[in-house]
Image 1 (tube, rainbow over the protein chains, first blue to last red):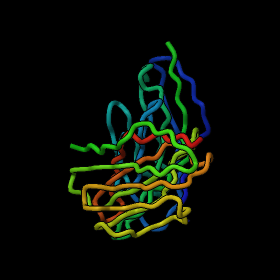
Image 2 (image 1 turned 30 degrees about the horizontal axis):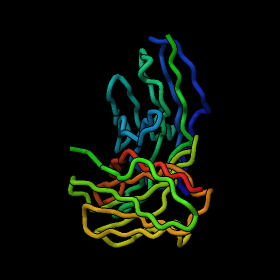
Image 3 (image 1 turned 135 degrees about the vertical axis):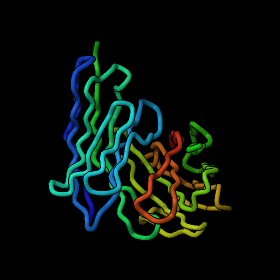
Image 4 (image 1 turned 90 degrees about the vertical axis):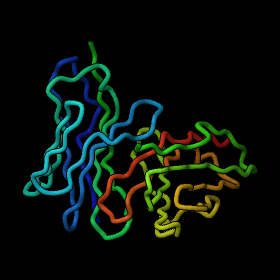
Length: 114
Length: 113
């Protein structure tokens, strides 16, 4: 079955540091890939997405590139802020022609300090 | 507008109570989802509705009963829950084709005493 593997957290960074959160996936076919962010006490917000190989998703300074050859979708940001502190989930959704489940990674907690 | 709304935000119920969670979207999406999220874990899919028909039930206990009255509304009826059912319940919606972005509501935080 489909699966997503994320790097274990928590990740603690100083403000303005460079962020990478690794994500690799296993899936049949060509799924869509997503990064969702969850702030404390809230639901999940879509951060960015990519729907085919070599697509780059970007939003709010975050970027991730769909790498089919390495089955990866690593999240990066050049300079993190305290307000980026949250839990980040990598996820995939297969093209099935009908509504299907999101398969999530375990989540990576990011803590950014001054 | 990519908003999914959920009510109530918080719910405390006893094991003999009956309660309902509500979800609404006005994005014209024809797929709607219920997820359950325990602390420090990713969301787990419970149910999927496609064109107002139940299409996926992830072997959820019968004390959880979903309902989709129309294409904009999704309910989750709760009865005789157990303390281990305490969690954040998230609703989501998307286009129906698969591979589409799922938009999540803020969730209902449920505590079963």
